[in-house]
Image (cartoon, rainbow, N blue to C red; front, top):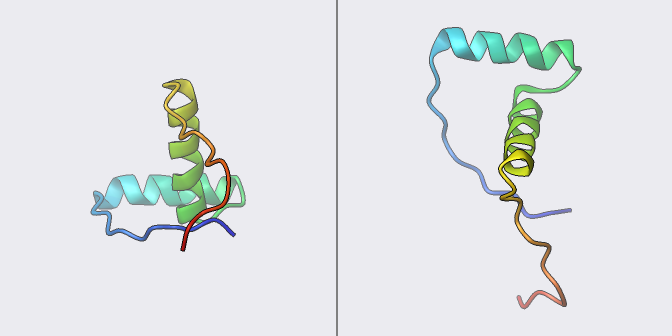
Length: 58
């Protein structure tokens, strides 16, 4: 499983409710919906992170 970073997001209540409805319409959690939105935005901006090559050092 990929490493994931946690962070706090403050968002307007109305926007959160709209996001919550959008996520439910697509059978995702709010967190999953945010990840999907960010992924699509990075793709469109051609700013996706490059895959890491080789072994990771621990």
